[in-house]
Image (cartoon, rainbow, N blue to C red):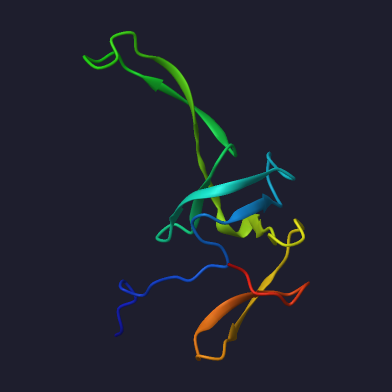
Amino acid sequence: MISNKNIQKKFHVRKGDTVKVIAGDDKGKTGKIMEVITAKSRAVVEGINMVTKHQKPSAAKPEGGIRKVEGTIHISNLMLVDSSTGEPTRTRKELNAKGKRQRVSVKTKKLIK
């Protein structure tokens, strides 16, 4: 039996990309990806899926309190925004002249950086 524990998942988005939410409560909003959690196929997007966290008083923060932080959102609910047009687009992987795979916009057929 083959173990799949060490296989790295590959997604259409990565850290630093600007994405648009296509499903859920925040549908239509855009934001920048701060973190990708490959094991759970989820991402943390700036300003999207804000959740309330209750912070217990501690020596560092004696007042404690309630704060808002970004929650995770599933990768399938995100669509990459093409930087040249500002429109959401699907991506395709193509080989460049050096033989390296790079992401290309399906709409504009331009390289995504």
